[in-house]
Image (cartoon, rainbow, N blue to C red; front, side, top):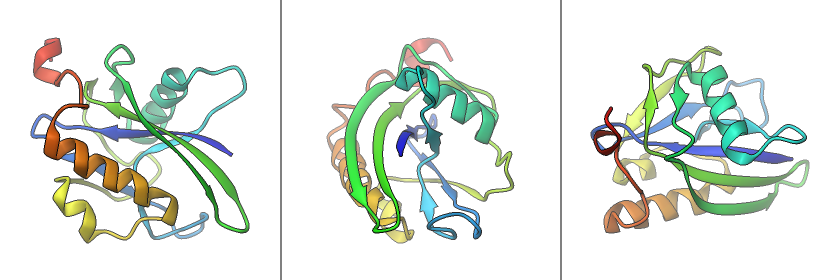
Length: 144
């Protein structure tokens, strides 16, 4: 399954994470928001669509930047996670599907339980946020 994943950044450099509903694969664990890429969709379009559906935010596709790809085999499911920085968006994030949301610092990510495929994402975010080199333009730099 090909999944577009967003590392959504708030004005205060906090990162948005969501808790997976219990009835889903890896339910109860925390994740970076996103969802399945539909046939014919580009990654930025798929990610913006998923963020609008799940969080009621309008991500600025022009500011999105790729972070990494993660391939993982859970045994019962194989995933390809295409992970992108989302440093600019409009709206106030809310769990449209009833999911709990948290804004956390890069350091606090270690305090949450994520699916195994998210381990490389957590490490990459913590590394990049420490360096502040890969994040791209901040919301304040794009007139938000």
